[in-house]
Image (cartoon, rainbow, N blue to C red):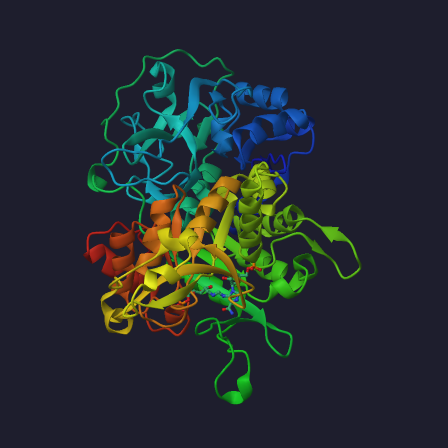
Length: 588
Ligand code: 1PR
């Protein structure tokens, strides 16, 4: 169709641009990737989905010689839509990369969120999850709206156009929406002339995000174009309100995030199936001990997206036995899921340095890269993280530099950003009988910070835990081996290595339906300033409320209750909303 505007996407190879491509295709549009300078002349509309870091964005563009052509494109007045880093590069500079220069279209700096946030509860950085975006200024007459005020969008970033960091007069001319994270307000999208850009990811924001993309794509080119820059000077507009979030005055602004998890492994016939264990045992007690089969990974992922999951997580639970890059079926599962799931996708299992059966060495970074290109937004690292932190602590004890820059966490975090690296914990309780005199002496000194004594916190398990105390030991290979390192050591260690989120399972609670291990989640949440996903043990909607309220976890994950259709995601969200916790609305 020659009458249709020619749409181009600019990619500098930094991360998951597959999702944007998938959402454009889903909306029925064709596009081309920008290959060289001449494509900027051919483009009628341009999308720039920046992922990674400001440095990667600015430097990545520089490396492929695209800085000047991109600037010319924007100044020509043709429509531009930047996403995340694709918004930030329009600014002058970023605290994230002091030497790197942005395009300077918006003369204002990008700054880091303050994790120490006063007065709104502890706030983790990155700002990761679903938050609102409210119109900053009164719409001009006849203006076509690109987004709706009462929707939530998916954000994942540590830096933003925070208010109060410089002369705002130019910033406010661009500010389209404001959002708030804890006590900090930032410009979450800009729109002026031909320039539109969002800090959040519309391609990961479910139906609301697709709707926004559709509006921009549908708008006739003339309606979203401008005369060549510089744009005519206008007085800085008045903000509608200094507080963009009147309805969510409490809390950080993020919704309580619900994650659906699919443990995937091949069954004895060699097919990938979604399975689910009890305390990590996935074989049927009867039925010849077959691997429990709960359905097909791609169709279940899509079902949970439709049902309103805020995120979908795949854990390839047996991949530590083989090389992930040889595991094409898992890559296929991610690729196919990314075509129908427009919320973040996490993939775990086997993300580590490996050697293919033919002897080719593969770094963790390469393995992760293959998943990102297939459509994953985050990778989750389990066993390898425990080993890395153990080695880190040993080096430190010997007085050597703690960080080598060589671990998977470090290399992936550097290349794709901390937000793309999740560490998955599989801790096991180590029990002590507190009725034995001097029992405390049996507890290794190093692990006493992680000791829980007295009553356990979930209402339903109290009777089981009388007379016991315990700490949480790290395990590897899906709980098969234990390591002499506790979860606090692990949490602090992986945070230093550059992890951006922690997924906290529990071998004791997995599949039990007894509720999340609140002591465990609380200990870890207090030890770090990155987001925490609570996992293992969800049995009823009330368990989710309990874990959010009592631990401050940013997200809660469940598997069994969703797979067995015992409790629906909508059910969990309705129950949270009834209790006054903010949730992303899920009507599709
Ligand atoms: O070590 O980097 O190769 O990663 C392996 C990954 O596989 C780890 O993230 C590890 O947690 C996971 N894993 C390994 N073995 C098992 C197993 O079950 N035998 N599954 C396993 C972990 C825990 C969660 C589960 C929640 C919620 N299962 O994935 O979804 O416990 O379940 P529930 O709501 O039913 O209680 P590496």
